[in-house]
Length: 125
Image 1 (cartoon, rainbow, N blue to C red):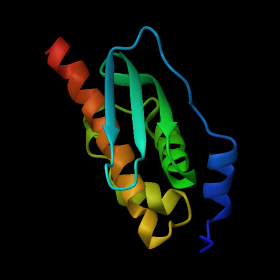
Image 2: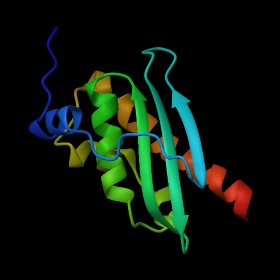
Image 3: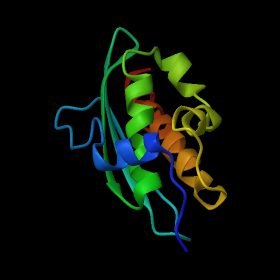
């Protein structure tokens, strides 16, 4: 069964932004979906309560990579408070939609970012 991915999903899958490990991170998190096997690792660098830099590693499908890629682009430079409220629906919208069976990837990406922020706050508040 072929999935009908948007141009934006394919662009972020084939050319992901902000992918890679960050060595001097301020917060990190690892999230996964045991049903599909997708996994994401997030790393954030914080300055003046804003996300100065964000990176991710992915073990997953095209949607997993694309959702993390677009999310990292969107939240870079954003305040922690605004990033904590970032809605997975916006990820789907920014990607021009996702197949129904892949919506969980956007939820997983947002969850990973939120947990990386929680990790930072647990060490710094």
